[in-house]
Length: 118
Image (cartoon, rainbow, N blue to C red; front, side, top):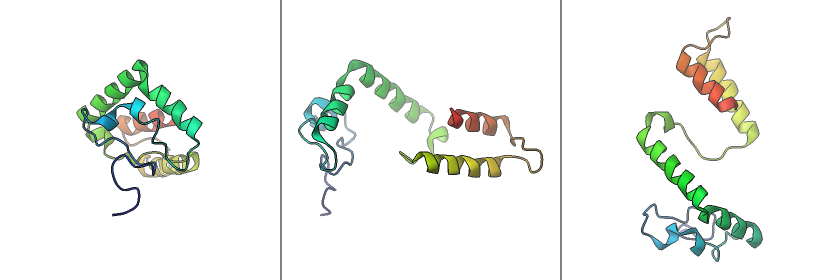
């Protein structure tokens, strides 16, 4: 087995198996299982944020939104650096604007571009 590939490992990968009843779905239990590459106090601070009711509500809302609008979420890839994000926006602009007039090919393309610039 690949080191850190098991669920709940300290490699920095997802700690939850995606099942709500799993013990690893409770952020208070994560405090003692910090990723090896992260300072322990930073990890515990994140766990304190994740256990708050406000964060849990937002997380549930986002999870429902992702599940109900699969079409809008099919191009997600997780965290990307600012430079990578800017590069992807430039590619999006080149592929979704009419040549010569710099106008988006559709209202939807314009909306998507504007939402990612915020």
